[in-house]
Image 1 (spheres, rainbow, N blue to C red):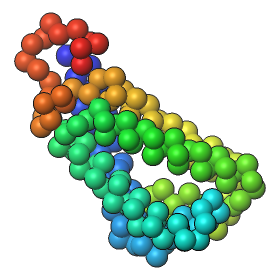
Image 2 (cartoon, rainbow, N blue to C red):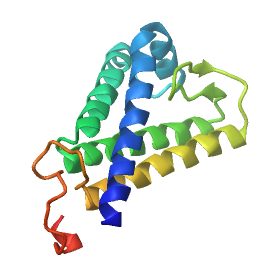
Image 3 (spheres, rainbow, N blue to C red):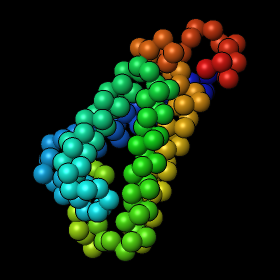
Length: 161
């Protein structure tokens, strides 16, 4: 039973992260463009499409997790997004860029130090751990998806999740 409760907490917590992050970026598209551009990883032709698509992806991930639909695949997609974001932050740090990650709004050139990058990476690793948990244990109470709902059978083995 405790696994299902932890899964519910992980699902709702991660949903909140994606919804807040996505909404902030969606609400300020100009600043999101600035944030994506600051990483200096994409050709200019791709900056605007990524800046437009990322908030939408985050909002969809958040909504699906909130309602508990396709939790395992959504958590897997979220994990890929998080690994990509961690890699982008590591890249900026390794190249000596001084930027705000733009993860929760803002972004662009900023006065940051190594601890700022390390803190952002540690935070995202925590979110990645929540995604990994949901990939392994996707079932939780109050989920709509058939593969995500906690079954009424209590003697179900953990790996059958």
